[in-house]
Image 1 (spheres, rainbow, N blue to C red):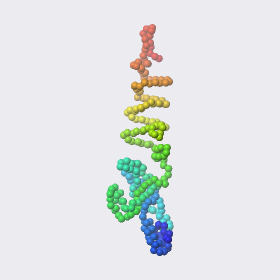
Image 2: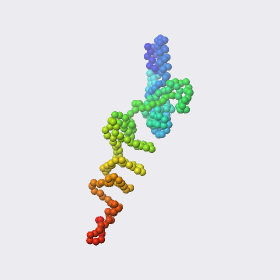
Image 3: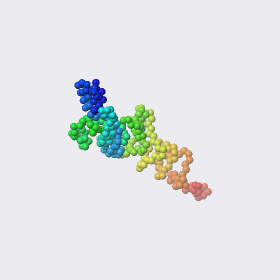
Image 4: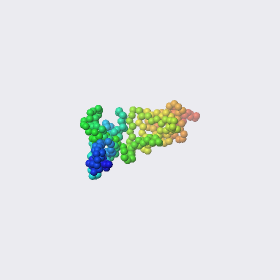
Length: 265
């Protein structure tokens, strides 16, 4: 039997030992010219995470060839390889490949250059088959731990980012509703520096508990309900304190000895 391992030019004496071995060598030699799939490393990407159509990558195949003397031969770099993006219609997850990423390159059975140009139905521009020039990049294998990610596990979903998370939409709803498998429904917002809310109006449907200082610059109006109850000291500085139209700083009372009392100290 032949010891041919799929390397072009590695003809041995055994390959000439009979018609079967010769045909086997010829078949394996032809198969070795077919590209199917391999691991590649990204050298560069035409996009850098911005809002843009899907681009292309330049990649380096990672599995070396071997010559007839079993010496390694590095593949040439591949240019203009379209990469995969998770997209349906105008909806997409934009996460472009970056330099150093390792992923899978698959190779089409026919020349896809015309389809790449027209982005639609087209006839193959040449007779090449399973060629390195007709590669497609699918990323995400053999890479390290991410620092920015969406994580799914039994504990739930975690969105982690070392930088700003920006949500843009005409309406945003956060619904912490009780379900059949959850006993409590709580929405927590934690900020180590500040929480800023900018809105013409804000509505809280339910009781509000504030454990820190409540400071207001635009005034306060309380209407309806049971009014306001304050436990502890009430300190008012500056301005006037009025109750039912009476200014508590300047009001007077009739003096039994005649006239009116003075204003409160």
